[in-house]
Length: 158
Image 1 (cartoon, rainbow, N blue to C red):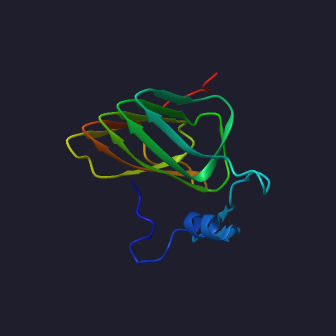
Image 2: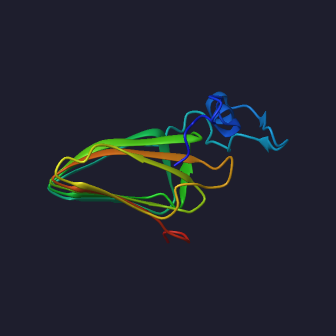
């Protein structure tokens, strides 16, 4: 996982581009542009909750810049391979109690996985980095007697 700043303390061009939604020229002369986002008014899905059950979201769908996830004695599966992002930076935050949260992502996104595991675990399969300017997905889920699994998978969910 790359820090948001370089060694000199300056923010990376793709971070500045995403935060202010403007093109930025990097030190190597490359142009970083923010990724396309959905039209205004299209906010995307904001929550996925499973209580004593299962919630699966796959296929083409739109995700909000912040998605709250909650699972209690259940499972939430989010397949982001065919998703439309509403922002360059997407945060998935939540908690799982005696449950699991699974996130499937394409290799074309940059991953950041954080969170405290309380009698549980975080599993990450795949590379955390992607090409400059790629969408960033931050997964911050706290599993309590549960698990958070983030897996990079090629292809689409269909």
